[in-house]
Amino acid sequence: MVLYNEQTTPYLQPAHETLLVNILKSIGLTLDDIELVNLNNIRRVDYVEILKEKTLHQFISFGIDLRELQINVPLTAYKVQRVEEINMLLADSFHELVLNTEKKRLLWTCLKQMFLK
Image 1 (cartoon, helix red, strand yellow):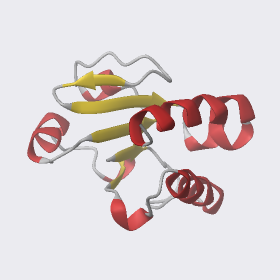
Image 2 (cartoon, one colour; image 1 turned 120 degrees about the horizontal axis):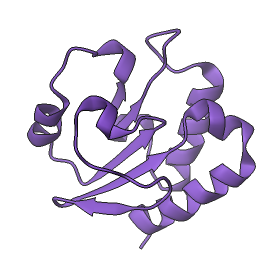
Image 3 (cartoon, helix red, strand yellow; image 1 turned 45 degrees about the vertical axis):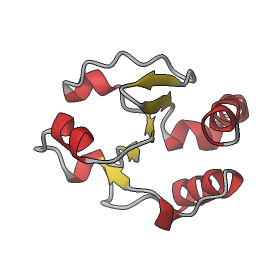
């Protein structure tokens, strides 16, 4: 599951989508292989229940601290953390990643740990 918050549109902006497609390609996945969730589209949802119902193995939040969703999982940015059989990662927003090569490197290090063991 990939969680992000795009406030100006219900979908990813083109530059952000390109970044995500490239990220996924680097770990052998496509957009069809993931569940992409725009927080802005589902504000009134019980996120804890969503996480319980899904058969998740990997969860990446782009720019959203899970505590904002009343999910008590204090993630540290760019550190893969295992929580109840789910590898979880907090990264910066797509907007930040598009602008910052060093943050993309940090993300790549984590993705290798999560997906390319």
